[in-house]
Image 1 (tube, one colour):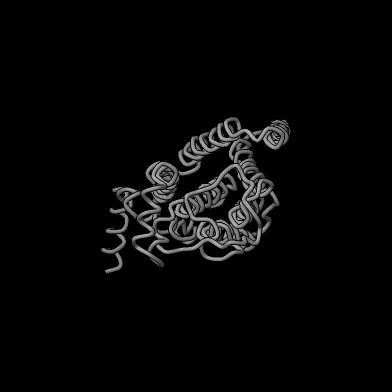
Image 2 (cartoon, one colour):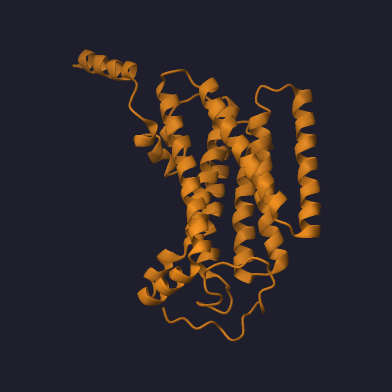
Length: 290
C-alpha cells in the first residue's frame, strides 16, 4: 500500500502516549488515523438510535438517557483523539469510557434497591469516578484505569444475566430472545478485544499486508477500527438490554425493540431452540385456525 504520510500534519506531531497500527496521516493531513476516527461513528449512531427510541416511550426519565448520551460521548471523544493524536484528547478518550459505563453500572445495581440505597450507591460510584479522573489525569497511568473499567464491565455483565433470569418467565419466548441478544453481545465484545490484541501484537505483519493489498481493501486490516465497531455494537446491546429489564417494561416485540444486529440475535442460534411449550402453542393455534 503506497501511502505517503503528509510532511505537515495539520495537528502537528503526535503527543499522545498511545499510538496504533494505522499509519499516521496516510489519507489526509487533517486526520491522523482515518479508519480509527471514522469507525467511531458506530458509537454515535447507536447512541442516537437509543435516544430516539426512548423519546417514543412515555415518562422516560433522564437516567435512562444518560447511558446513550455517554455512548455518543465515547464515539466523539475517541474520534477527536484518533484525528489529532494529542495527549489532552487521549485523556478525553480514556475518561469518556468511564463516564459512559458508570450510569449503566448504577442502573443495574439500583434495581430493587430502596431510595436510600440508590442514593448511597450513586454517591459512592460518582465519588470513585471523580477520584479516578483526578488520579488518571495527574499520573497518566493505565493499570488502575483499565482494571476499574474492566471490573465495571464484569459487574454489569453478571448483573445483566441475573436480571434476565429474574425479570423474564422461565421457558418464555422473551427470555429466550433476550438471552440470544446477551450472548451475542458478549461474543461481539470478545471478538473486538481479540482484534485489539492482534492489532497490537502483529502490527508489522498487518502493515506489510496492507502495503501488498493496497486501497481500498487494505482498510479491512485496520483491526483497531474493527475493535471500535465490535465494542460499539456490544456496548449498545448491554445498554439497551439493561434499560429494557430495569425499566420493567412488558416483553412485547423484543425483536422490534432493539437495533440490528441485536434484533437478528434475538432469533438466531444465539437464542437457542424455541421452547417446546411455545411450539405446541403455535401448532395448536394453527390447527384451530385451519
